[in-house]
Length: 231
Image 1: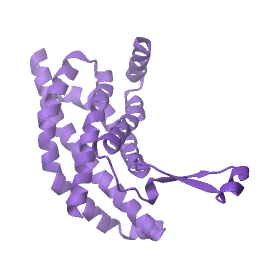
Image 2: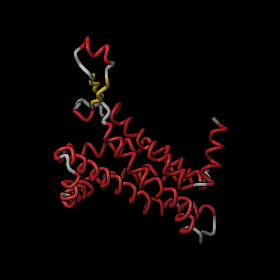
Image 3: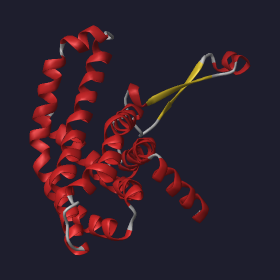
Image 4: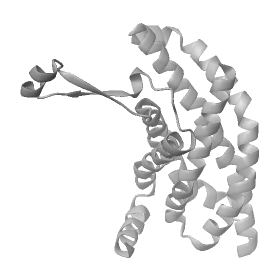
């Protein structure tokens, strides 16, 4: 385990942005799976929660079916949305933030203590608000887009309704952002004080991503709760 950590640390130091987006999507997806399977205890199975498993021909003749449908409490499309957002947007953003932007913002700090406090303050003001807001908006935008696609079977219809989808995601963001950000302010400053004090810059993104397993579970829970309220 220690060998793996050392190898990953060397990899993250050489390629901080690539290491960030390659791992952030997986870690946040685990958080969403944890939410669906443990916290939400979902009962609303539907077609998108089902997997059709092909049956061998010899067995298909006996049971008179070519496929067996397996239902699951995990919404695979929802997990994919989280993975896509984190891999394409959040992961690279975190990598750039912790290795380039944040060190530049605190370059004028005169003492170590002042540097840590400045880093926590900038991180809470910029990164946390951007991450919470973009997560809530982008996941809702993806979900609305997929819903329109499944309804019409046409990508042209999704593109035609992009303005309506945008406003739906914007309304969702306005409804959910403040309580999420207030909880963020109660949790993340303490995590980041330890992170900035003890962890090298190139490893700060993996630390944030690891803690984010639980944070993404909270975000997914708030995201779905808000959608049920709107419905």
